[in-house]
Image (cartoon, rainbow, N blue to C red; front, side, top):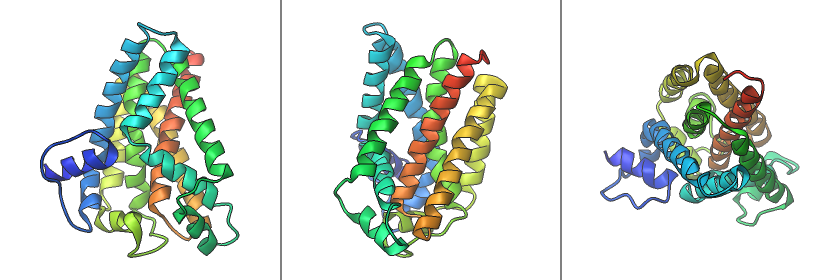
Length: 249
């Protein structure tokens, strides 16, 4: 339970009572719970959107939902996404990592935040029917599976330094593959073959993005892992919006 409490406190701003797991590898070990936290978050988002649409238009409800989504998660992964976009523009790996450690946000990071939140809200506003709550459940679940999957086989850019390196040290190599399999099975159970396509899209795009980033940086960082969550979530929402438009559900 201590690992679950740590996962909840790390991934959300919820005031979870009780002692959390301690130690340099505790977060990596708590990663087994990350997809579970994502699934609970997704269920809450689905319920919240249902309530919001009783009061507002679909677009306003979607914007408010995405705002609540990012507030509840403390903007943790958006911060990593923005830092990564700023950093990859550097001239060499050392400079890129230095830019990412800078607390100030740059042009690329700011643009990335604006576009990511706008696109997410637009995609959510397009979701409809019985598939909508299921897609909203899957997006955070797949998103929090993505860093476990890439962390299973990519090395840290700065071994022994930073939260990302500590996370990777404690992460089981089995956590990512097992949860990725669960994600695909659950996606299929909720939405059929189209759901499997959503899971594949979210994980595949996140893996490709992380591979490109790790080449630029010489490995993984906490910001890259956080960006993987955002990329996977956004990919699931966009794929869901597209499949709904094509009449898959």
